[in-house]
Image: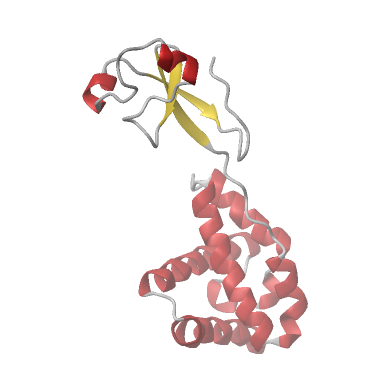
Length: 185
């Protein structure tokens, strides 16, 4: 690798962590540490799969397919969740937004990497069934019923949590999304 090219990456990383994140973006120390860990994981991954050691990596060693391979590696080999994968991608996106503004010769590379999308999480919610009706986890003290069921009961629809504890069954199901109704079985 050309020493000048690897110095550009090192200069960009230094500027990103020393100036851009704390001074321009005002990120917290926790965010900076998270971004540091993400970039470290990326650089080590690229060095292991690309050949040159970390101190010889340059912008030419990065491209969309390698970033996607890194994200797949996080999920498959490191067993990271989709949320963690997206946090790592967020750090990479932030770095390449900085690169695009400070190193115009890498604008095309930056735009390509910024086009890598976040992965959507499959949303799983628990539903508790109680005597034919169901309640969502966010409201454990209130039983949701329709007006017909309430008219037939003399007890109030609200039960203390201790009463619910022994009578609930849980079922994991995929949430249908906003604006859609989940049908009870």
